[in-house]
Image (cartoon, rainbow, N blue to C red; front, side, top):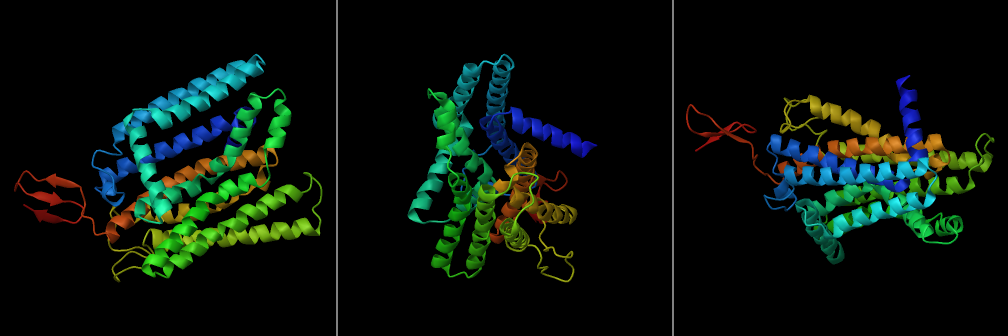
Amino acid sequence: MFSDMVLDLMTEAVVYVPVVIRASAIALLFLFGWLINVKGFEAYGLPFRKVLDLRKSEASQESIVEALRVLTVVLLASFAAYEVCRRFDWELGQSVTLVSFWLILTALGAFSRMTLFKEMRHFLRERAVNLVHGDVVFADVLVADVLTSMSKLLADMQIVVCAVLAIFSEYPDVIAASCIRSWVGPALASLPYAIRAVQCLLVYQSSGNTAQLINFGKYVSSFPVIWLSAIHHQVAPVEGVVMDAHDQHMQVLWLYAVTINTLYSFLWDVLMDWGLGFPSSPASYTLLRDDLRFGGPLPYYFAIVMDLALRLCWSLKLSSHLQRHATGQAFVFLFEILEVFRRFLWNFFRVEWECIKQNCPSELRARTPSDGHTRDRDRGIISP
């Protein structure tokens, strides 16, 4: 069956592919998703650079493609070198390859003169300054929300750092075992949600908008999912052993937390982040608004259904107790890939709604040869 083939492929990936390679591949998928976002924004005339406070030359498709090519070559070359070393049981070569790969990525991010990397450094510095000063703009919100989708990658950073430290140790197995702490992974996974929760409180403090308190509750509802799973991971019985009453209660609490967080997040996505669910006129499509920048209603209905399904996968992805065995890790790796898809889908409608709220005119203009006027195809307005 196709599902079994996919599961076998994911299982091989988590068994034979190092965490640093897997995490980098997921990050590369996020960058590819952003390229699709940029293509879509430009195709439909959404002024995404305006709402993100970017210059017109920034976040160009060309710069993203250039970075994708370089990062893909580095990733594939490093993985190929690692595989050769693994085939010949050369452990030192495997270690050197992984450290070299990590150093190359760090050097590219910190020092590369490529356009995208320079823009990213400037953009992230602005986000950091705003965070320190307690300022919150839409770009800060979007970046923090994207980081929530990368929470598993952040949690895996502990494994990556410990693996690098073990390479330079005389007793690598001892260092790797003693380095990893049970609380660090959940803490790192919780960090993006904590940042967004603080942002909600800052916006509420400055604007008095009570909806931000509801949004605050949405991000706080992620913590029980993460930490109950972490506790379950520590006290869970060996596979195949019947759970005792304590473990059963822990499982029920975790299921409640997942259900609440999934529905909470889904409703906020649709109603508040996308501005759907409140038709402004009787003529509107069911659950949709009048102003649909991406054409007809089908993309919006598709996004609503997919967001609900993938939100559930996202909640499960946060659960470390599902990763005790290779099959569970394979599912989590698959959920990470699906989360990339959900996030770039979410980006389309989140940025669209922000453009509508800021009353940004469409950038999609086509000159009609018959009258020499410029027609705004998004609003049907003809201007000289």
